[in-house]
Image (tube, rainbow, N blue to C red; front, side):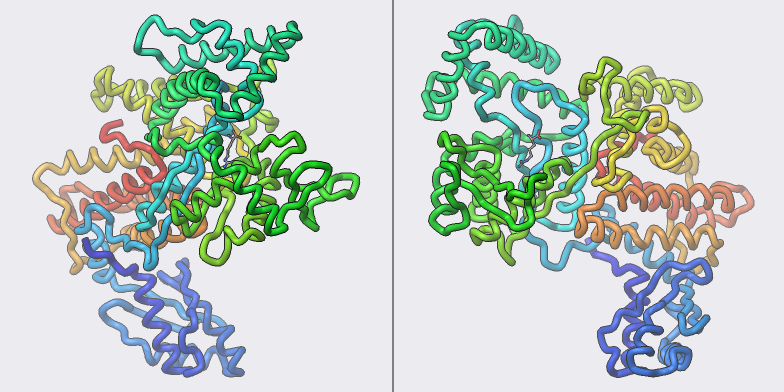
Length: 589
Ligand code: ARG
């Protein structure tokens, strides 16, 4: 388990020390190294540094070049243009570096962060007694990927599924169930998620009908809300039945999503009930919140309604009730002071951005969020239909997540089946791969565009074998495994003494960037950059196959071994990267 310094970082260090030798005031300056078409890397940092010190950039660049030792790592370094440096790496350094990554099977040489901390991530937060929709899909998929990526960099991550399990809407449901206690009974102890949801749906509709038609029921339902908030044990017991029934459904959807959600990480809105009164007291005593028309409010200079009047964050309503904001503020106190979070991340729809802006600002004023603990909303955009409008069924209803996943799996299974005969897949394997490909397609489509952008949900495109899709990456992986199986006696072995073809170098230099990509992605919560990295990796692999035969009889044995080694490391990197995104890579496809 040794972490590997990337080639680009080693070059950067060499350039930085050559630079400070040539120009003492440039100590610690970044030479700004980038991948380049002309050489392996280009350093663009000299121009600005020369300008600052009133030196001639080309002269400074020439001086730097004369300070750089070449041979082991850097093969060639030359000045180009007005003062850029073009750097070429030795073939041996590339293979040695990759060999060290290959030897570290678990982490592929990726180092852990220098100073990891604790992150509490709030994601996958559906609502009790309600169907999950595509918005919940995004939160779950993005949140799970960010969680995996952060953990891989060494961060301690606490998951919080802030489900909507509290509020006045439960009064009607509880009252109805209390009057019809057998409505949620099960014939069988093994209830499917589908059945649970249809029970809840039926009950919701019946309760609604009665609520709208029967004034006396309405009164009883309203009284129920009061009992619920007062913590009446019987009312709570009935409420708990809704939560339990909903969890059966949630877990079934998460399982369909091939995602592990743990019961102990589900801490819904109700989990903060005991803190609400104190949260309000602290805010009022510190003057952060003020009473306005009976309600406890926090005002902001830059938050105004269309009429120009300030729109406050309401922490407590004038009737004494607490809402969404009080719960989120209490959750911040819990996460910062009990869970000792350094960072809070909220994977929530961009349409809730104003809410979080006000909640975070309130917590800052109260001193709960300060330099030591920070909060960030990882906001995501809306899922659109093929027509570019918010995703709805033809009847105009919101699309059920389950239907979507089922359709994705059906389509994917058809794609897998078409190729199955050639690969010799059993019916069971076809079905399993169909699930992994279908669910992977949905996750990848979600993760491969920047989260805040809206994206079009287009199943045809998602399961396409060409282009930036998970299927393309899964096939790249399966093809690698097939080559490794076909290699027979030949084994993957790194041979640093060999001269590399351009496509081998390009693939190798990209493999070298895996760790840096993961760390960048973790720091900015941008899984789409990992998806882009993996797609480029698969593209480099395709070019490599075109230009370099792996198992050709014309190859010297060490060339075969070295190419198998490159292919195998690419496979491991794809596998790890996809796993971080929550996507499986079947061995045969
Ligand atoms: N349950 C909410 C919804 O479905 C999302 C909760 C987001 N998390 C939070 N801490 N407010 O929109």
